[in-house]
Image 1 (cartoon, rainbow, N blue to C red):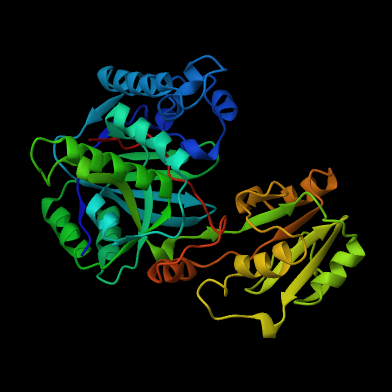
Image 2 (image 1 turned 90 degrees about the vertical axis):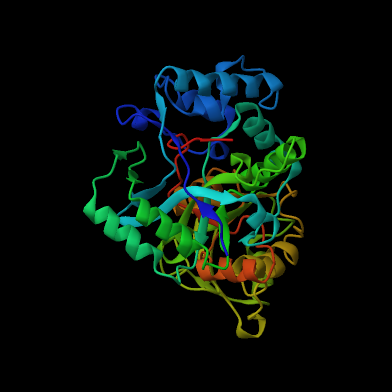
Length: 413
């Protein structure tokens, strides 16, 4: 039973929302954020990456950064850039990218559902990244970036949402600089709000698609505030975190590709020979080459694309070992390049599919990488099956697009 509730959001005015909404804080560096906000005084990056308003040599984890974030957020509220809705409500968040549409419900999820594994995970988190958002949320007294969750809609929630979208006009409708269209509906029908809340109670689990660190941080802030509270209050807002729930069949995982910067003493000839143990190796039918099905990989080295097809005797039905990223790790990264922990080894890097295969070619052609591998992305069913088995996806397995914008909703805790 999922406890997913409506809430009274702080939201930008319709005149300012396009100027406020910003990409998530963790898809850019501080330097990139400083460039992105030039001429954009209302950008939410002034809250999510507040170091951009302080001297360049300051650490992004300095306490002054979190105080600046708080100052910037509450200045936007005090000056009327943000207005809080009078009553708790759900919101519909629709994103359209390259004519592909996904629509989710914005509300607040229970930290108890997370603690009791009804909100399921598929990634490990790192303490230093958790601490950053813990300090940010605790200092701002607000959750500023929505967690991207998914669920299997077995109870007919999405038809209700689609019907509402057809019958009402959105409160926001804007296209961001990257071409992604964002539309928001404010659900004010109290009967529909109650129906949605009751239907989610029939859903056995939701799943973190993107935002494991933000989720863990929100939960830890909530638990910290529980301990400080004079008396237990299950309705206190810190018991819930800002989230957007999308049905899994509307989501799209992009490939998360790999580049290797050290050939481990191999020539192209010896690399191709070593690959033949586990793969059928042939020149790729297209340039650049994107794998067309599970068990196939592209490899780019010395201006040439190759197609790698995993041999049948190495294929697996295991929930983890059956993933293409796991097979590449076992048969290529470990056995051929001697790369064990991809999270720590500096000889490997990762390129999100949104950057395209031409980026892989550019990195190799300019000698910034020696060899690149293009991946066939895992499916949403792969991700959910891993989470259901209480397993962890291999690092850098999934890249979700489009990204949810921060700053459209703020949940005060």
